[in-house]
Amino acid sequence: MISQVYSPAKINIFLKIEGRESESGMHFINSLFAPIDLFDTIDIAESGSFSVVTEGISENIPTEKNIIFKAYSALQSYVGKELPKFEVIIRKTIPSGAGLGGGSSNAAAFLKFLNEYCKLNLSLTQLVEIASKVGSDVPFFILGKPAIVSGTGDKIETVELPESGKFFVLVNPEIHVDTKLAYSLFDKTYPDCGTSNRVPENFSWKKEHIFNDFEEIVFAEFPGIAKVKTELELAGASKVFMSGSGSTLIAMTKSEETAQKIVAEFSKRFKTVRRITTTTCK
Image (cartoon, rainbow, N blue to C red; front, side, top):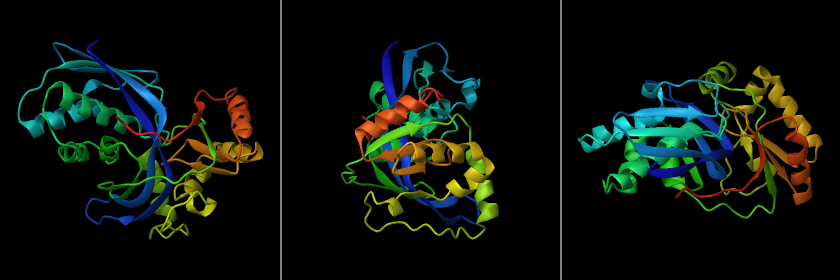
């Protein structure tokens, strides 16, 4: 192994779907993203051939379909020369199909590794340009700071999060939600994207500033997620919100004691339950 890098998950503190691009059908969003201290570990070694193995998930993803290989190919195309080949092992802690951006984060971490290891000297702007060809969330992870992400994910404005005075617990209900399905369900329910949620002009941690346009339709399709949200509220959470297209829930509490109680109670049922804080990507 020549290097070990860490790639963080993210949460959506609010997520508004504002419309669709007529030609591509891609959706316009307005969302507050924040990296959190839940990480995948990526072990990297030079090799005679390029390979990616993902540990910690049941799905077997062929190398040529892995987003890390897509990132490697996009970077090679951008610089116009052949890069060394690597054996990559992703040790997953971030659950997939969970609204936490694990795959996109893996791709961004690998792009930054390649830039440094291969001495490409690409700027952050250039890395973001390459990342945009890999996936809509990948540019955010290149920048690696809390940000307002808008458009089709191509517009990113980093921000400072205000102090919350709250404690946060992440609970993954172990229900896989496909993002394409979530958007399809949303389009059927809101053909004009006209939900009642409104993006705050100046974000604070008020309850009305924390929302997710996917929640209603995802909960209807996967009532098990809605059930866990209700249970978290009954356990003392002052606010519970879903990240991305689901299924991960974030419980916000007013006291550390309540947060610890939620961790202890829900860890008995689910694998990924932990206290979280926001972080930045290195």
